[in-house]
Image (cartoon, rainbow, N blue to C red; front, side, top):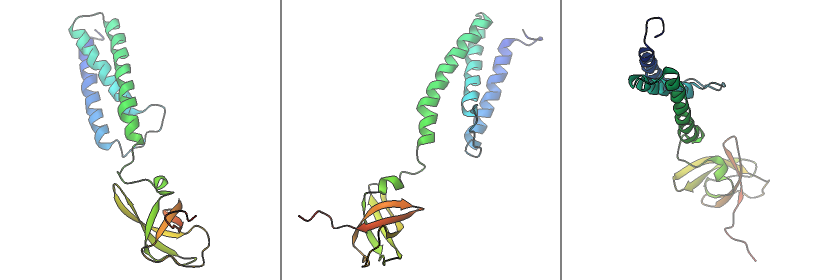
Length: 173
């Protein structure tokens, strides 16, 4: 008992509050960027698991200090695995299934709009996930334009502009 309130009741109220905060974090979590040392996406589940296991331990009439320590240990393990196997991969995943710009470098594309020397045109890159069009310019100075339908090799991508060179398809020996 703490000031007339049973520890079991405190665990239960903390669990309810953590569930409500977790629900709000799921809805509004992307709006706020938490880059500090304490991440609410980890602290709230930790408190929820501690209160859940604490509530269950108190219902089974175990020693309160032992229940708190065991609950904290179990919650730490669960939150570690939650962070390692769910949250970190979700943060590192790209928002779409399309190919990244780094993966495009070194690949071939087809010219859609002719690329004049010193000017810009448009290329179409095809991949397993679909195709995308990007503006393109020559990587190195060229004397001749590249006509529509020609193959080009993407050397570099800067500011969403592909820098390309003409591509012959194979080496001539």
